[in-house]
Amino acid sequence: MVSEGEDRFMDAENMLHLGRLAVKPPPFWKPDPRLWFAQVEAQFARAGITTDDTKYYTVVAEIDSAILMHASDIIASPSTTGKYEALKERLLAEFGEPTEKRLKRLFESCELNDKKPTTLLREMKDLAHNRLDKSILKSIWLRRLPLQVQQILTTLDEDVEVLVKRADSIMEVTTTNVVNAVNASNNSNVEVATIADLEYRLDRLEQNNRNRFQRMRQVERNSAPRLRPTTTVRGGSEQLARDYICWYHRTFGDRATGCRSPCRFTQTRSEN
Image 1 (cartoon, rainbow, N blue to C red):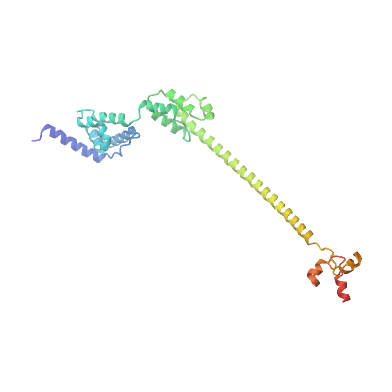
Image 2: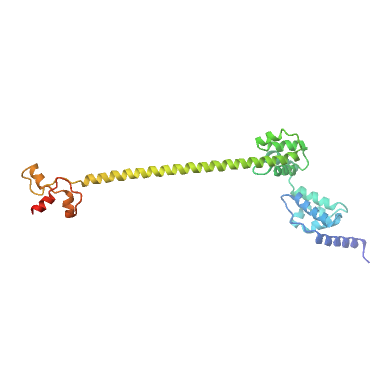
């Protein structure tokens, strides 16, 4: 014959088996145990599980022992009723962020940054966890928005749930205009940089041409023909003029094309 205690144990075991089949909780999430319990309870609701025993034994069977040790007294001597809620409250107290700390984050470090206004409001609501009046939450949220958005929204006497949708639209338009302005500025900067680069290149080219021209002039001056007697000077400048042969003919002979007066190369050849 089965005793009453054994019968209760078998019923609990059967309920646990059914619960495990219907519910597959994710691994316990320490950063936000409230969210974890919300997921588990959503599975309970979907599976039609409402009894305290089934909820309690399902959670105990799924959570890691390193987590459960923080509720060892509850597990060692579970109460007849309300054991699931007792376990839940203990784990939330052990791993959940204290209310004071959450409110401090809400007032001091919850900023818009690159988030949408709707995302910011959702985070604020989560941190407040129904501990703040809606008007206070609305005021804090408004102060986190850009000044131009605040100026528009403060003229509208509407609920924060309506304002947040308007804020998203305003921010989207504002962001688009800013991006377009930045792109236009960048394009303008590129054009200015291109023009400046072309001007620099032209200046360099002009300077190089001037330098090359000066070097050519210098070479030409150094290579210019000089009066040089082909015989011993006995009659002074008159003898020098009669005997002078230009540098081009001395260098290139018959192939010379740049002969300069008073060269006597041709006359000398005809006399010979």
